[in-house]
Image 1 (cartoon, rainbow, N blue to C red):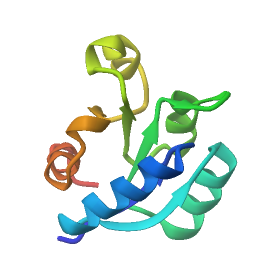
Image 2 (cartoon, helix red, strand yellow; image 1 turned 90 degrees about the vertical axis):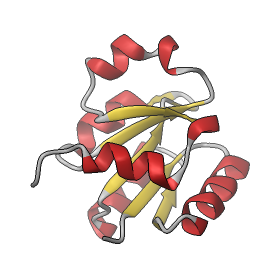
Image 3 (cartoon, rainbow, N blue to C red; image 1 turned 120 degrees about the horizontal axis):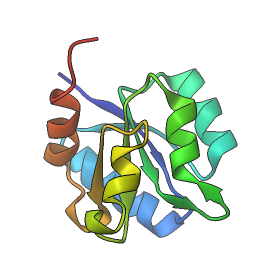
Image 4 (cartoon, one colour; image 1 turned 90 degrees about the horizontal axis):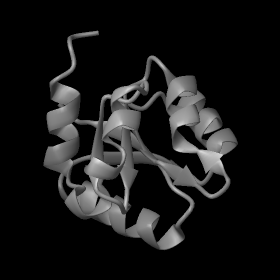
Length: 118
C-alpha cells in the first residue's frame, strides 16, 4: 500500500527535510501547507491518507487543525518530546504523536496501520 500524506508545518527547512526523508522511505508527500487555511484547502483537494501536523503553527494551533480535518487521520509532530504533549494528544482528534527527530516512513505507517479499517 502506498501511503499519501500532507505535511503541515510553518518551517520551510523542516518541510524540505521531512519530504525528502518520507519519500526516500516510500511515503508519497502529496502536498505541503504552512497554516490551517492552506492545510484545509490541500486536504480537501488532495484527500491524503494521513496528515502530519506541527503542534505549533506559528500563531495557530495544530490541535485545532486536527479537529477540523476529521475524519482524516492526523499525526501530531513537534520538536518537543511526546511527554510534553501526552495529555493534549490523547484528548485530541489525532491518532498519535511523533517527535520530529523520530519521524520516519515506518513510524507513520505504524500509526496509520493501527487504525481500524475505514
